[in-house]
Length: 115
Image (cartoon, rainbow, N blue to C red):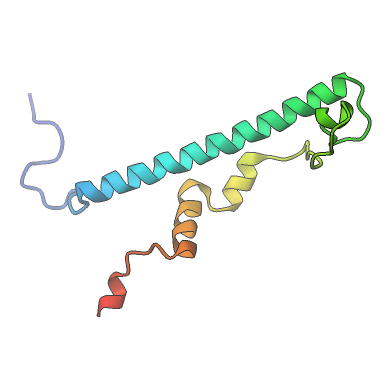
C-alpha cells in the first residue's frame, strides 16, 4: 500500500511554514467571530418574535414592541427586509470583518515598525 499524504522530506507543503501558535490564533479568532455572529442572529430572532407577538395582539404601528402594546415605551422600528447574510458579506465576510476590526483597534503585529 503506498504511503498517504505528502512525502516526509518535502519542504514544499502548503502549511509547512505555518506555526502551531498561528493556527491556534486563527482558530480562536474564527470561534470569536462565529460567537458574535450567533449572538447577532439571536438578537434579531428575539426582535422578530416580539414583533410577531405585537402583531398577534393587534398592535398599531409597525416596529412598536410588546411593551408599547402593554403601556410601556417604544422600541426601534424593525426592518422586515433585512438580510443578515448580505450585510455580513458587505463587511468582507467572516475573516474580512475580523481583520478590519484588528486594524481599527491597532492590534497589528507591528513587525514592520522594528526596522
